[in-house]
Structure formats: structure tokens, C-alpha cells
Image (cartoon, rainbow, N blue to C red; front, side, top):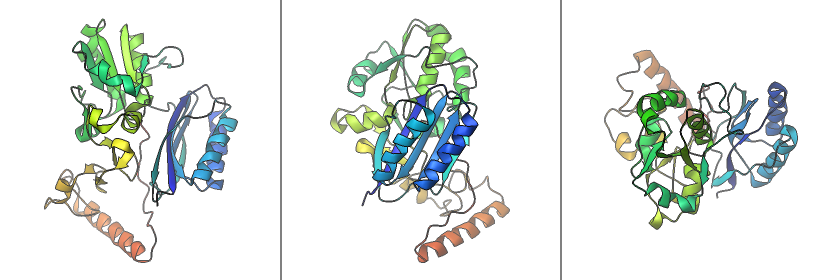
Length: 310
């Protein structure tokens, strides 16, 4: 069991010919039989990729060679089967979309705070602690005392900063996200807006859950991840969360016990949002999933838009 290695990573680095690199990376992933999602842009790469440990070693070596970058330092976890159905390598304008021109973490970025030092920082009553993730992610879990900006996408964060934080440019601002990439962009953006004391959790929530003992932790709940595991807890152990196939929302055991939940079709959040035709299509898809399972196979089904925010 746990024979699949999962690497979550990003690297801000100037990449020449991102389109050409995308083709080379896609070929590498195909040869190694990997699954996951990887974004390529002129500012760098960002992704979560899974395969056998041997294949992942070759992948990291191959990426460094193809992109001419330093070796990746991924957050590593394990599973008993691949957490993605496909491998997608996509060309993007940004590897994490903030939508603000001129923000470059390679030029300026907030102070990195190691997981072991994070508790001391966020326990300071003078620190403003901000969760930079999307609203549905924050609902599943966050750090004690963190502010939820109630954003649906990362691109909404600049508006929150302008309307809610502008008067606090001399305060200590601490930010965190899943794997660190959103905070690289967010803290760089804040520095450009005139904030002077900006900090962020190095390696993100995943690194914190990996390294900080649960008995010392200030984290509560699950950390949402953009794959079939849905949520991780301390020690990067998967939770009992699942995804609704109707709206892609994370579901708890309580959600699945609701009379508005129909496996593979709807959940309490989307039950009244989907049309009869959409529900019928979802039921047919679930029927094919069940038939494939009886044959000992995994049904891939229609393509679903997946994010790669970290």
C-alpha cells in the first residue's frame, strides 16, 4: 500500500519558450506514466504530479534539465492509488493567477517563516493573520484567529487588500496558503502596495502539517487539496472528505448523510442548482462509474476543470 508518491511543487523562474517546454514536459510525463496537473508559464512552473517513487525521481531530474532550473523541493505525500485520472500539462499566462501586472516574487517577497516558528508569529496579538485561499477551502480548516477574505478566486485578493487592509500598511501581516505559491504572489503584491512588514508560511499549510506535531499545532480542520484525496490532516493523512460531482464542493460525512445528497449527482449545496437534464447526465455517468468498478477498472468520464492553486 501507499506505493504512489505525490509531489506538490512550484518554482518561480524565467522560462524561455513556455509552449515548447510544455510539449517536452508532457512527453516526459507520458513516458513515466504520471498523472496530475502541471502549469507552465514564462514566470515558472506549478503542479501536483503522482507516480511510482522511481518515476517521480526521474520526473524531478527531467524537469530540472528541461527547464534549466534548480532541483525541485516538493512537498511529498503518498497514497495507495493515483489521485488523478489523467496527466494535464497546461500553458498559462501565470502559474497562479493574481491578475496584476508587474508582481514578481523573484524581485521582492515577504519574510519566509519556517513551520517551527509559525506558531510564535501568529500568536502575537499585533499580527494580522490572513488566509489567502478561496472561501470553500477556508471552510474546511484554517489557523486559529485567521481572517477569511471570502474570495472565490485568488484574483479577488487585490480587491480585498484595497478595501480591507489599506489602512494597515505598518502592521505585521502574516499570510498562508496550501503550498506557498499564492503567498509568494500575495506578499510580493503587498510589498508593491507599500506594506512594510509582510510574512508568509514557508512551504504552506502542507509543510506545517508535515513537520509540526499535532499536539503543538494551531491548525484546525482539514487542508483542501486539488485531487481525489480532497483533504489532508496532520501528517498529510487523507481525511474522509469526498467531492461532489455536481459542483465539485468538498463533502463531509454530514453532507453525505443529507437527504439532498445523491452519490455522484448532487449534494446539499447544488441540489437545487442543477437542472433535471444535468442530474440525468450525472446519473448516467455514475452508472458507468459503477459498471467500470465491477470490472475492476476506473471510469475516466468527461473532463473536469481542475485548479492547481497551492
